[in-house]
Amino acid sequence: MGTVYSTASMSLDGYIAYDDDDPGALFDWYQAGGIEMTTAMDDLTFHVTEPSHDYLRDQTLALGAIVVGRRLFDVTDGWKGRHPYDVPVVVMTHEPPADWSYTGAKDFHFVTDGVEAAIRVAQTIAGRREVSVAAGEVATQALEAGLLDEVRIDLAPVVLGSGRPYFTGGSTRVLDEPTTIIQTARVTHLVYPVPRG
Image (cartoon, rainbow, N blue to C red; front, side):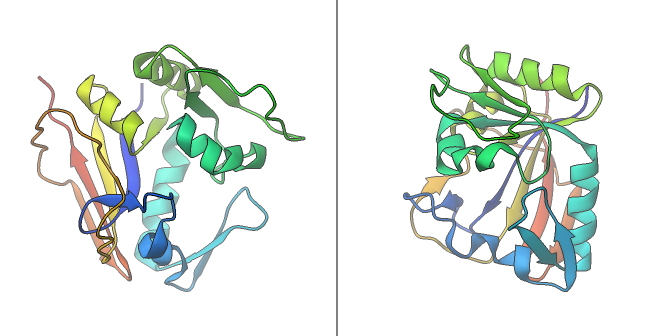
């Protein structure tokens, strides 16, 4: 099985969005450079720096599936049936949507029996590739259950003041020293291993 990691752009004070789910300036780094990166969505193209391009390229090439909560799925409207990274999405939810459908929608899986089941489904889909877990409630539950191998943070030089935190509670965890530190325009990419045991 591949690495299971949580990831998000985060403010200096630990938030991934305002309370209304607006990320504010946290995503500015996606348009802070001269290298174009297309996505699976026709209306979404990034313009990043070379270090961010290389970091994102390596991450997306290794990615096999994404696990998200129902809130993120609803906020994005399921990315209109196709995630920007064009990989399968496992949605952890109490109840699958009854009326969500887009022409050409593919590889959306709704799991109703908790984070362990959702990650297990994602790992089965991903095979040897990596599984990304969205920050917030899902990442918190995965960390508490001992299911995360890494915490990845795209740290933006922004203070939101309040909002939705990267982790929403749980017990104290001390992560290992970062294995990746990439500082570039409007972001520092960080990768922290999660110690086992």
